[in-house]
Image 1 (cartoon, rainbow, N blue to C red):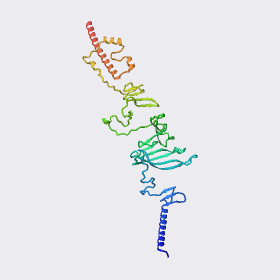
Image 2 (cartoon, one colour; image 1 turned 30 degrees about the vertical axis):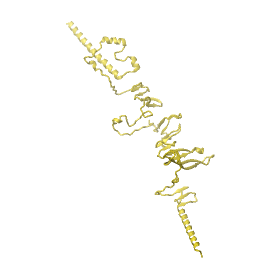
Image 3 (spheres, rainbow, N blue to C red; image 1 turned 90 degrees about the vertical axis):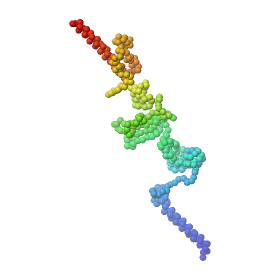
Image 4 (cartoon, rainbow, N blue to C red; image 1 turned 90 degrees about the horizontal axis):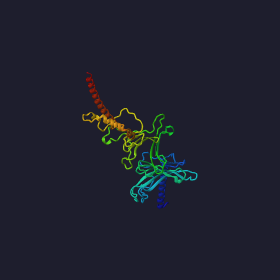
Length: 382
């Protein structure tokens, strides 16, 4: 017969064996390792190397990476990396076959104080490689802990921040159903010199037989601008200097045809058409113009005062003497002045009207003399 101690040990053995068998049975029901080499976690027929058969109603994560409660490196600069987790993808090259070609990396970033990483944000970083050398594995894109996305920069300063070497297109937008991708919108650097940047937006339309290139549209509420918005509009082009102040010497707007200037708006508000030198005038036109109506507002007095009773009409003798010496009418600019400075249409019309009114007075005076002479002649004939 068995002794009591041996009976107790035997019972413990059977109980432990039963627990192990039950655990193995339960584990085998949840996780499978079929001969295909696939692994299923709660997936009885895994269709991939690893399939996790979790329900969409599960409240836990399918995969968690990292160790809860681990602080990582805390003695790092502000913005430094306290720790990271990598998911690597292998590529292949004949000379370096064991090579990582892409990486998804989660970086813990110190957001608290220098050398005191008590608050650590998380950046998600994407690396790719052209595959020549392992050192070619380079960060291409980053989503930082504030939600900013950086392409070509590890410090995105906006919701989307794109940085690229000189000569590289910053962005290109196109539509796949245009012929050869001919329709596109690009953002690029307009100068190839190092350490220089001229932002250029290029719109290339694809509308065969139609004149489109780049179309700008401003949708606005159709209201009369208030006094405070008097300088605003549906589409605004606003030039300013680099310290947010008005320009003084530079041009504000240029309209060119393949580099040849057609229209220029200067910082003082003057406009040049066909010329970049307005010579201080509000509008300078080098060429002809046609108008259906034009109004010139004259700021000086309109010459109706010529017909007032106290107007001193110059004598014909003094007028003849002036013309003999100067070869032009009084107050009318000489040919040399007009050739040099042009003519003021409003002022010239005013002066011409004044001369017409003076001429009218001369004719009236002459007519009175003729009438008086005719009366004397008629008396002599009697």
